[in-house]
Image 1 (cartoon, rainbow, N blue to C red):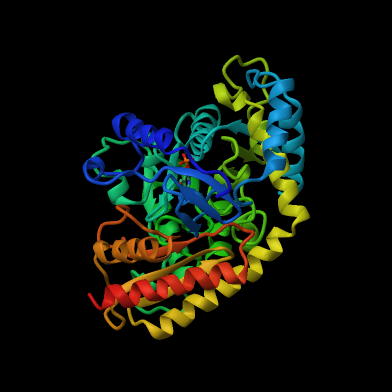
Image 2 (cartoon, rainbow, N blue to C red; image 1 turned 60 degrees about the vertical axis):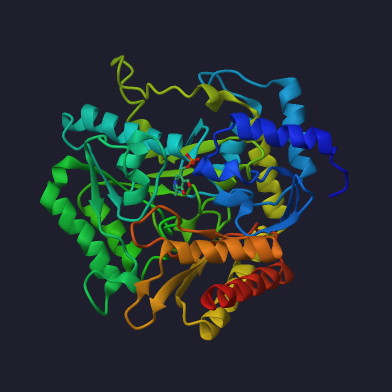
Length: 462
Ligand SMILES: Cc1ncc(COP(=O)(O)O)c(C=O)c1O
């Protein structure tokens, strides 16, 4: 860190934080005895806390967001220039960066056509749910309104998005939920629900069709899926899965909504995760990496066919999309997103993601060969996971406390911040998650892998 932090000022910050800030996903009792980590500066892959301690961030800001890394002056400048010229006007009007980013984004998404701006992944997904419900009312007398979601997937934190959430512990204590959301089985072959099958991908996709037939195809409006399940355990789709899912959606006239909140904007080595699998979505949502956390922005992107359903009948005063997002009109988001996209292109970060992602998998496989606690290694691009088990043969998952201890040891020993499925899936909070910034190098990944190696050895030794 270049600047010395004034110790009086920073002690005040820590006290103010302890007294007044309610942190996300944190049980605060521990702050009776320890200080919260205040992250005061970042550069590239590294961040520094209030004590000047350096950390290597293997999770891009904790929740897979800072795709282009910290300290990007050109993004800060683009946002500043835009804010001085025009900071905000409601989304009923356009803005220069809003129009230009939409154009650039659609260039990367053949088959897609329209961009609706909002501020978080949850909000972007809610827009899709409202689109599905409104189409159901306008076209199908309200009947085709059900939204299918998948066990283990996550789509956000609001009550409606939690209603579409496939993680029991994330949902626990927040019901009752919104009606009309129906779960389909997960597609994690390592935890096959049908024993050993040759065509697991097809079997898991057919399980979606079984739900559709049970519910009645004329009641199902959309299927909402992550291309690679992120927080639910880094689940890469099995062979044949997506082709069959697409076929099923077409067969029953069901809109396919792909949640790219994590995978979007290069995380898996293509602009969007779905582009690995030849999927033709009707709606795509994105947030985290769109502006790498330099500004809040999310996008709900649709095909022209979906958009046209909200335009076709100007004589009906209720038939257009009557949604409001106050801060969808902030220009900082698209201004940052434009510069973020330029950096991804000019620095060839998609290529880097593919090659570094392969290297990261190699490193995790080496760790698996050495440590029996690693039962399975999975990933796509720079989103990788290692599932921890008590016993490789039975695949019994380790306790959450064990995976947490490994995360804690990486942090304590080496200042390496890694992630883990936490309080998401009862009994299955056992997958370590790695999602470093797309600028990472082999030496960064070596450092991260070495830290995990030491932490596992230490935790295994008790
Ligand atoms: C796949 C997925 N969708 C949606 C969300 C919700 O995004 P946000 O926290 O910005 O509302 C998340 C957040 O982690 C996510 O992982």
